[in-house]
Length: 400
Image 1 (tube, helix red, strand yellow):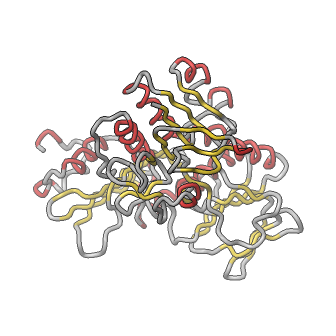
Image 2 (image 1 turned 180 degrees about the vertical axis):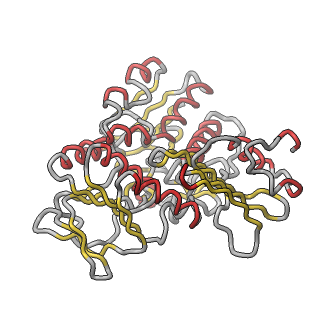
Image 3 (image 1 turned 30 degrees about the horizontal axis):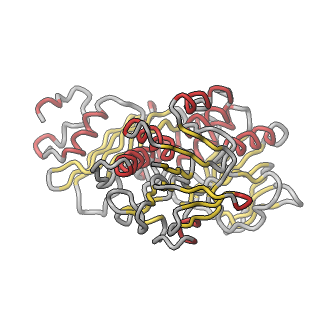
């Protein structure tokens, strides 16, 4: 059995490792557009910040792949799929046949239609090459603006601030981390970020990047302008679906898969940030991990189903631990919400309860009891009797 894996990110790597465990005799080939081995994305931020070296960035060495009999082809992207004849095309028309194909080529940085994004000094951050380019540029262009106040934007802001740059963040939404935090939690986070010397601008739309050939500032829809020498766009990602769509596989916002992670064509599977499962695109590490393992099990002939992933992010944002689970910003009047805030310590806790069940939680500035909160949400335990006590540091979770 020969399995081709397109992409060497988290999903492609985990699927290959799992498949090797399940099928010792399978031929496994990974074809990657990038010239570099797989690295966890948090490592890229630490590299950008100067806290880790390129040598220890990667999760696995080339020798590790050799030892596990997994062939990895770096800098050799798949350009075209031929589902009926079960082969793919590489650059130059070279063909590679397969018995099973896994599309794990992830997502790409999305750049909004802002005038002037082609100027020198405008960057996105997705690859090691992106990070190297940013590091080189900000040595002499230290006035940096981050366009986007989501997780990636804030982590980039922290990283370049660590390198001594002057940093401002501009965000379209009226609060930071709109997917992970509510208004109160975002306010606590913003206070801690600004304590680091990072200026935050909320509720503004970037219309144009100013400058004669290179970045000199930003112009907003309101008419206001902001001086800058560097702009990093962190406005989210879009799934890479072009290979699948051109080959006639069913796509929407992502590559559509069933509960076994199989696409609309037998023998072709997909996993990771490019996948749309039951109308959802997750874009989070736990989903990519679970999808990759499910696809590997199915390819190896084992029964395993993927039924979805609870939206849960455990992050470190500008040095603060943050876990956001489930529904954290419900429709008003449909739930009970309880909060605890110690603003000077950056601590903010919130739980969301509906019909006695815990359906969402925010835990920022502390990790205490978060594993217990996560289990309660996953197991749908009725907490109605204790809902006002769950956030106490000394609550005895054994009663549940």
